[in-house]
Length: 70
Image (cartoon, rainbow, N blue to C red):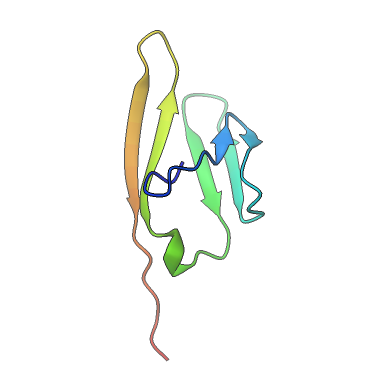
């Protein structure tokens, strides 16, 4: 989930957002991966992953987008 824009992108492997660049995969163990195709500068920001176990667990990541000047 992009934290700054407060939009839920996925719930487990089901993609909620209508953004076709977003997908999610799972390695069948304990790791989930959020994929963003054709990353743009406005994708930068804080993302949050949360699992709803008996005690909810949350992890944050920050996406930096670096572009090349022409």
